[in-house]
Length: 55
Image (cartoon, rainbow, N blue to C red; front, top):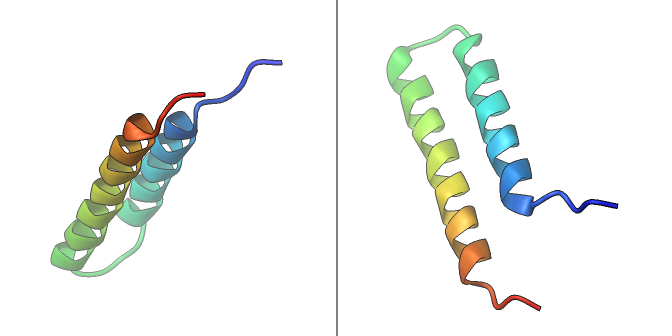
């Protein structure tokens, strides 16, 4: 069975989160900050996963 890469999962969740965030009414500044945090978290997670020693 093929293994799904954790980075693929986190980026999929990040993009779905950004899409859902765009549907929420409210000030654009707050949505931009939250979206930036989502993308930053995805980048950090991907970086940490790539630096992890492979088995």
